[in-house]
Amino acid sequence: MTIQPLQNYPASTDMSFSGCITALQKISQIRQNDQVQWNNLNNQFISGRRVTRVPTTSSNVLATDNVGDFNVTATYAYFCINNSGTVEWVRVAVGTF
Image 1: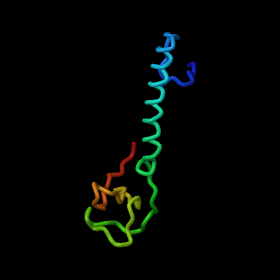
Image 2: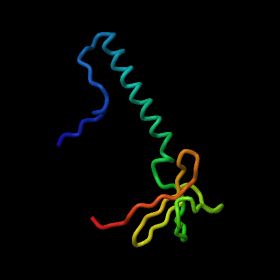
Image 3: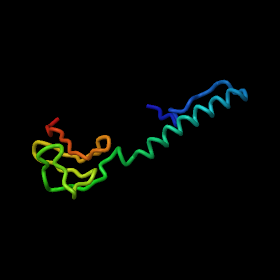
Image 4: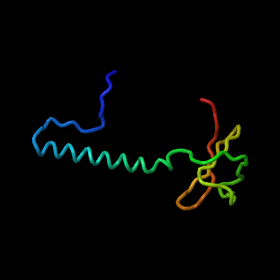
């Protein structure tokens, strides 16, 4: 397998001035998209703390609960999230694979 550096960037065989400008514009747009994703890292990863309580419903949010908090039991993984401005708990069934 050959590793191709910058494989996501456009390659241009048009080495004219306008061809280079077009390639640079495409690279600039890709970098802008990368920056948006980088700025959104807080929402991509768990940034909270493990809590010991198990919420009984999605709306069972206490004043001490923070977005990003989580807990795992034998049957579910629970995550405290911000759902369009409403803090709530969600759960995912735990299983083997």
